[in-house]
Amino acid sequence: MVQVIQVPNHVDNFDPILEARRIWRERGWTEADLGMALVTSIARVDQINMKKIESNLRPLKLTFARFELLRLLSFTRKGSLPLSRVGNLLQVHPTSVTNAVDRLEAQHFVERTAHATDRRMTLVNILPAGREIVETATEILNREVFANTGLDASTGEQLLHLLTSLRAASGDFSH
Image 1 (spheres, rainbow, N blue to C red):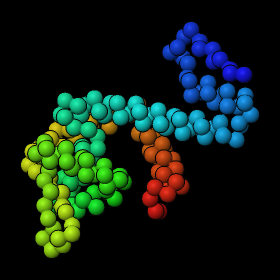
Image 2 (cartoon, one colour):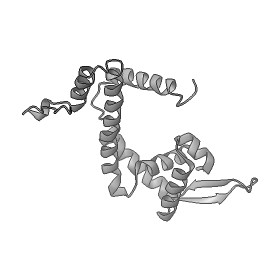
Image 3 (cartoon, one colour):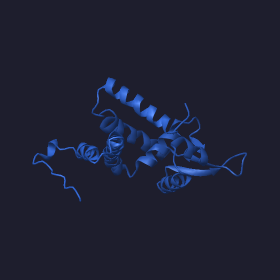
Image 4 (spheres, rainbow, N blue to C red):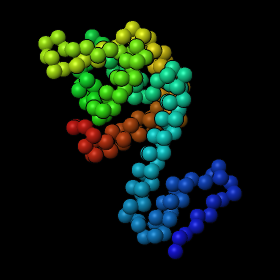
């Protein structure tokens, strides 16, 4: 029998994730209800943050992935990295790096060059226009997203510690 969820009239106070957790417990899935609510909440917060980020980057014709790639390159001494290193540092699949580099090349923000001593290696280099756009994007994201998480500094530090522990326990990086 399918259970119908009764949505309260005051939708502002209704949390569908907490309601799903209640139903999880009611179904006897008590060993998993907290994990389901945590994973679903983290996914939802990610969706909310990505929507904010993308809406602030859209006028600059950037995505968050392309912003991250430009920001990474701008942090290097020479403004360039091997394509394979970019994927490792950004923790993304090589195909995603290739796609982002293709789009950034079309925008004249980066260029590919051959490595000076290893012909098998391709470097991606940030161009002056790429440096300029990533500085503008960083100013906007710092002001509109990163400085306004909705948490005070102490709570933010606690959450960061917890998420870092979760990532480490999931094998996201070695500690």
